[in-house]
Image 1 (cartoon, rainbow, N blue to C red):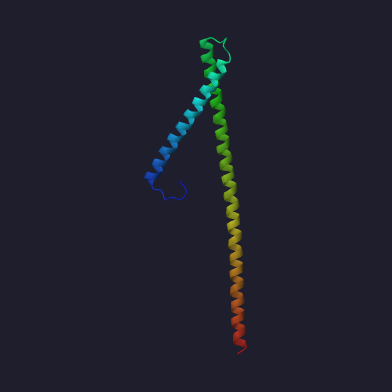
Image 2: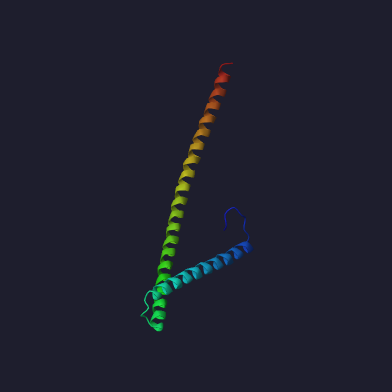
Length: 123
């Protein structure tokens, strides 16, 4: 769900489609970057035959995409861990704040009741 907006099922479907399209475009950009890097590498090795250059390019692209995939998965795992840590901390802070507000409310009510009783006794 996107922040700051009320979403419906249709919005979620469109959002899922947008996320999928964004993921595809990101993967394609990584692939294109790996392709350019492999071509630059092969250009620095003029002794390679065309077949060897193509094979090296394929290996490089696969290796580069595997590394990118591992990095992205690691980042996603860490983001999930941080999210859980923040949620836990936020819940603890909310409980503490609620207890403090309840204690202050009780103190105010006690003082008010005490002042009211004292006012009745002094009449």
